[in-house]
Length: 324
Image 1 (cartoon, rainbow, N blue to C red):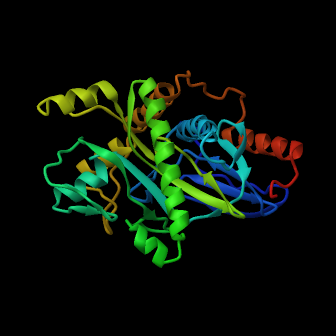
Image 2 (cartoon, rainbow, N blue to C red):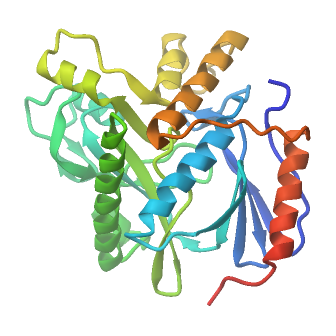
């Protein structure tokens, strides 16, 4: 666990800004190129937890690469190169300040809303009689605001247009792209024996062109179940709950110990055993979803030195602007 990547603080050639997010450190180069470093930080309930997870950043980065390459058949993506297991480089876009959340299954936030009596979610009517783990007839688009600090919040299409976060035409196009990406993600997951239950997409623009940005279909942004265990439960609700592969189990572990991100609550002690279990879960998801064996870096360098060297080599080889 000594080589985990808690954070980076590089000074890169042409660097114009740096942003340290919940999980990623994002460097802007010449105002048109972005270098995104996936650290091993982990967040839950929009709070960065006190201990990092070994290899989590590599898993997120390489899963995102796997799906971004496939997504380019549907929409242009921001990604241009992956020079290191923890690094992605690509085009800087002007982001839409919303997340396009797509839900195919009544679980997580949707189920918590429904089971507490809510019958509407982001403008979608929820009929009576739905049970947990039931599939929606058509996947729901349930957007949220993208908060720079604090919690993201549900929002309707009407409010998005009213607040100028997207035009009506843009929102319709984003929804169409999100549905196509979700269908592709579900098909790719099904081939690996998994069910993609819900996820979120982020988009940006260069000129009038919409790009898919950030990560896609990772365990931080998505919820997966083993397809056979989900089908067993849907056929017989007395069976064991479906086995999932996502970050939700971390949230559940925290909630079982009285933590849900509320003011005044203390994060439970994250033991070495728990950290190791979370790391193994992330690696398991990588191998399951991609069908590839997970390979740990083995160059002898401390992780941050390796990452900085990889970025520098990439920028030296491709120093030019991407902006059209």
